[in-house]
Length: 108
Image (cartoon, rainbow, N blue to C red; front, side, top):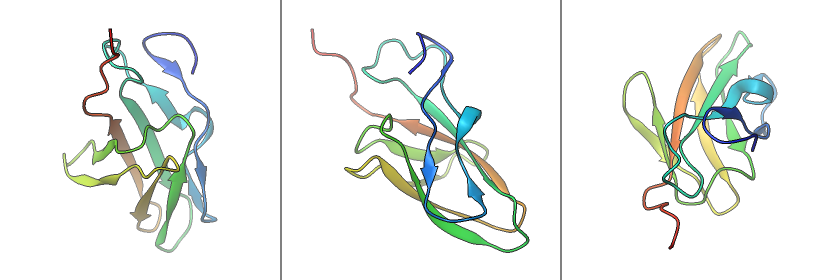
């Protein structure tokens, strides 16, 4: 991860062509300094003319974190023990996702 506060994190990888969630599309949100890893925002994009479903994976996504659609507030899944979660997008659709690790406070 880059620096504290709002910074870029390592790119997420996807297992489906047409689905993108990498590069500067994942970042640590500001104001999350009280947690071990913070809250991460991931943008998933489908550049194709058909629906896609796949996995978004990154070593910076903490296992058991909750993945929420930031526009609807709906929980869409959890991060598994490999740092991955599933996402489905319609044609030319995008989603801003919040990855929050509940109970991520650093032990003192």
